[in-house]
Image (cartoon, rainbow, N blue to C red; front, side):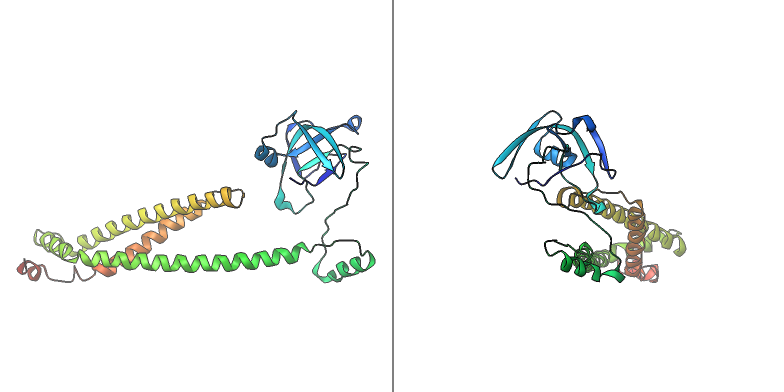
Length: 265
């Protein structure tokens, strides 16, 4: 595959050394390489391995001296592979850097290209703005799907409650005949549906966390941070949502006199 190579005297301050040692001034010109940890794991490369690169019509072989952890989200200039100074001295090179330009001085980039036509300027801010718009639209679509799913689930729950109305009505009538108060039965229903909603919210939180972890790690190759607020919010929303819909579906049970229900048995 193709690789962009670079060289450096000092260890990049925004990287983290995870294996091996960084070279010193006496190592200049030696065929040593510094690899990013992720690409090394992907290609199965370890310390001491030799890698051969072809630049134009020439090739050179160098040894992996250390591995680095790179924060690619920092928007700083980073490379998968870095060599010691002098190794690439006889090869053609392009120079790259990054800089911050305030919005009030956005014309500076146009002036820079006009002054140096051979410069390639990439406006990262414009790219990130477009990426944010795409993410916002995707998130909005997911939210609508989520709302439709929740609404469908609540309707199914309401239908399930309606299908058990007769059994609940008979049970309530018998309990009230045996001396249970209307308030006690009401509290029992609230406790039943609250626990049901709590369990539903817990399962939904577990599924959402697992799906987020899989998407972050396997699809987008991003770090995943556990969010306990999601679990708490999921259980509370589940308890309130399921409890409210369930109570609406069973509100007529306790309003019906038990004698009228027992006469229908």
